[in-house]
Amino acid sequence: MDASFRASMNQAPPLIGHNVVTSDIALTEAVIRHASADVVDDLTLLGVEAGTAEAREHGMLANQHHPELTPYDRYGNRIDEVAFHPSWHWLMERGIGHGLAAAPWESDAEHAHVRRAAGFFAWSQTEPGHGCPISMTYAAVPALRADDAIAKEWTPLLASRRYDPGVRARTDKVGALAGMGMTEKQGGSDVRANVTQARPTSEDGFYTLHGHKWFTSAPMNDLFLVLAQTDGGVTCFVVPRVLADGTRNQLDVVRLKDKLGNRSNASSELEFDGTVAQRLGDEGRGVRTIIEMVAATRLDCVLGSASLRRRALAEASWHVSHRSAFGGRLVDKPLMQNVIADLAVESEAATALALRLAAAVDRPGDAHEAALRRLALPLAKFWVCKRTPFMVAEALECLGGNGYVEESGMPLLFRESPLNSIWEGSGNVNALDVLRALTREPEVLEAWISEVGAARGADHRLDRAVDDTLALLGDVAGLEVGARRLAGQMAACLQGSLLVRFGTPEVADAFCASRLGTTFNGTFGTLPGGDLRAIVDRTTPVL
Image (cartoon, rainbow, N blue to C red; front, side, top):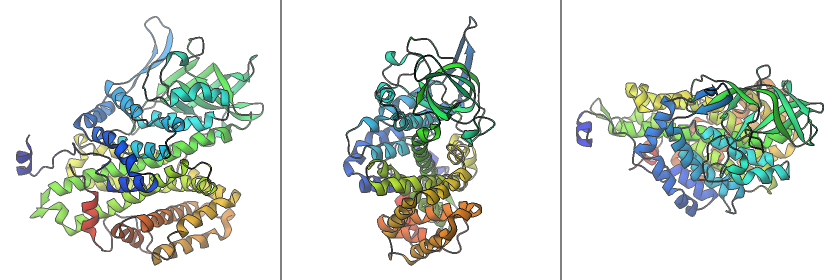
């Protein structure tokens, strides 16, 4: 169907052929703010490829054809292999080739993590499920640094830009992927309730694992960071898929999870029965050892949710710009402008906060950045991920019935939208983590006050919101019942500060008037006024 005929039928053309990076003004502004225009230029080819019809098709196919588990080969040998559709491998090859796995940890570039974050944000809009193994691979490196020898063995492969799938020994591969196994069915987020046992062998630092893991994504990855009980308590271990001599480790995939979304990605239950593992860090320090991996995957949860928001917003704004109803284009209707502008404000706030957190990773020796990252990660993980399903649902509704059919891609986004709020600690876990940080680490509150204080005096609504939030902190230890409220307010103040300082006046005013106002009810399309058309024009993709 050519464009003129489609227009005569009042159907919007598919959103293809745009540059996902350069057509996103909020993203490019954030990258330039925290890095440089050269980083934007470096991501241009990624943006072009992410916006192609080919990428869109591969994303749909990877979700239509789910991973398949083969426990045994034809001779009855246990192999526990998962087969993926070719579209999955197409997406993985390009994602890793663009340096979105662990490449920043081996890079000498000044803004390597901002570049990677922006690339992950843009590329994930092709299909979110394959971002999971890429994210875990990125996140594994800081945890592996608890043991220099292990880190030297694995980091170059994890940081490789070459996708090398297949069950083979580390020495036979040019690239590797990492996974994580923390949760068990009796404990969930309470990993200290884990019952998987680690028994030391005669070789120093090596153990055998015996137990069950309830949720381990990407079971075809090359190594896993796993928690298990030793005599000293919960301890972290590195579990290779294949041992050094080339034999397969005893790692049984019980089944693949049948999930609401994220269906292109294989999430599994694993059984350990004599599985060889190498201790990472000291016995009894497993949570502290693996927490760096958790922090990095939490950042990717924020980036992933912000990416879903942007893709949903782009589809909605594109549709209403090409669809007519009641005598005119939808985008020219005042109420639709309010909806799209409100969605845009929500998306820009998430993008600004996610890239700010990525910038903190690029400055590991800065005490302020480290303290801000410690507090702002769970804040952002709670607030951005929690609100994403509401935003994606509203964006879907902008397409009407067209948005409810699978071909639009919107149902895929909607099914994916709750995931990042659950992965790496649900809403309650992150809200309580905020309280824990405030109680135990006074420097994190100082970092938050300094960050939001940089916008002091620029907007009276932001100033009032910050003061109201500080008033809640009179008794942090007794705030558990209100932890969600506190986390939401602190996150919104951070977003408001970033938009007031760096955003356009229209977006900053709309955010402060709605998210920080006394009448905020969470419903999209209720902005009190302002230059809504400017916000809509700013956010609509241009081919």
